[in-house]
Amino acid sequence: MEKKVAKKITWTIKNFSSLKSEKFYSDPFTVGGCKWRCYVYPKGNNVDYLFLYLEVADFESLSPGWSRHARYLLNVVNQNSVKRSKQNEEQKWFDARSPRWGRLSMFPLNEICAKDSGFLVNGELKIVAEIEVLEVIGKLDVSEETSTIMETIAFNGFELLPSQVEFVRNMFEKHPEIASEFRLKNPNLKSGYMSLLLSLIETLRQSPKELNKVDLDEAYVALRSMTDAGFKVDWLEKKLVEMLEKKNREEAGETRMKEINEELKSLNQKCLDLEAQLEKEKAEVFAAKAPLSFSDVF
Image 1 (cartoon, rainbow, N blue to C red):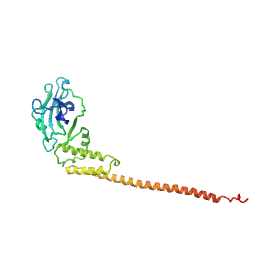
Image 2 (image 1 turned 90 degrees about the horizontal axis):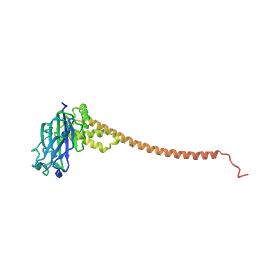
Image 3 (image 1 turned 90 degrees about the vertical axis):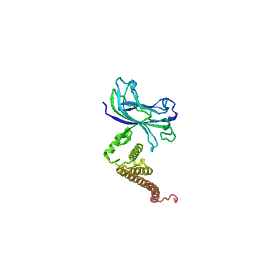
């Protein structure tokens, strides 16, 4: 039995209303060492509902006796955060007889495609599959990267990209109180604020030379926004103040360097002028020391 693994996958279907195919598949993605995919009937299947399924992607090539036990939630996202999304949560065994599961009556097409419903935005339909692999019988699959699937991992109530998890885990270990008073509950807004926090940290990790005052002013506004939302980021504010001081020292130093350089240029020109004057004086002194000539007399 494999360790339980939970992940969230976001599948964005572009130009949903223009799809002509009877079925439309997502690219495969890997959760718990197993390949999965979602697929929909975008025009319904003899009834006016969006049929949405989760399927073991390579079930036809798996060895006899395979099965996967999973808890999953299929979510047609309402991109208007005020309105509710449509969800179907189940816990099922997937095997050769039942390689796919879904719910047929959860997603009426007339509601999804209605104008200003919030489900279709700029022609895009977003589907989120949250999958927790509980048990795997049979050989695991190989991980596969895809282009139309965005994988996220839940950590401390925030949805993160896999590449962000280790950094955020270390951040919470050093600052465990960071989100203790975070007030927002909307998952999209929470993820947005976490992305903003990580972007701000990445900005402040740059050298002062790579930043300008506009960048730092925007960083300060972002910091205030996070503080207002309940993030405890006084440690980050200290870093921002430190960066502002470094930037001020850098700019003051560069201004002084320019002044000194101009002063050096002026002094160098004076030196050249004095050297020319010296050579002239040497020539006059040399001439004064020469004995008188009587060639014009005799």
